[in-house]
Image (cartoon, rainbow, N blue to C red; front, side, top):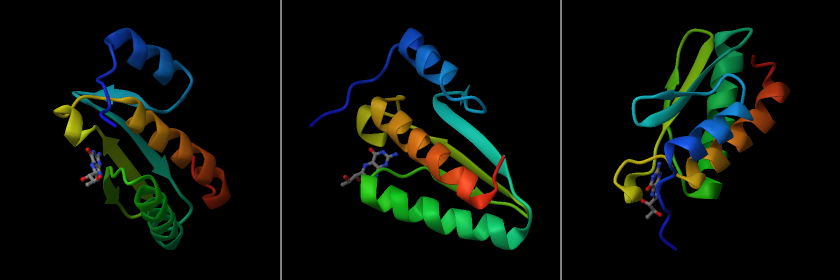
Length: 101
Ligand SMILES: C[C@H](O)[C@H](O)[C@H]1CNC2=NC(N)=NC(=O)C2=N1
């Protein structure tokens, strides 16, 4: 099923429900801070598993004690779609279990 690009208003409405997430060019993005590099690494593995489950993948960056994601939808020409927000909500749901803020 093709996914449609969201309008600017639709993106803003969805971002308003996701504190910490913002629009970064043509992507939505968030950086999480964790207690240690090992905790950050475990969160990356958890996100990777979720991305495989959703068949939707962010650009995921592991820092010393940070995890950063940016995501847009390749198959929608690089636009932001509902699939990106589905992933963002899933990551938000798993973040507290890793002590991420
Ligand atoms: C074949 C497979 O469904 C596609 O390549 C998926 C995989 N992950 C993806 N991730 C993202 N961010 N956008 C896509 O369009 C996309 N497509």
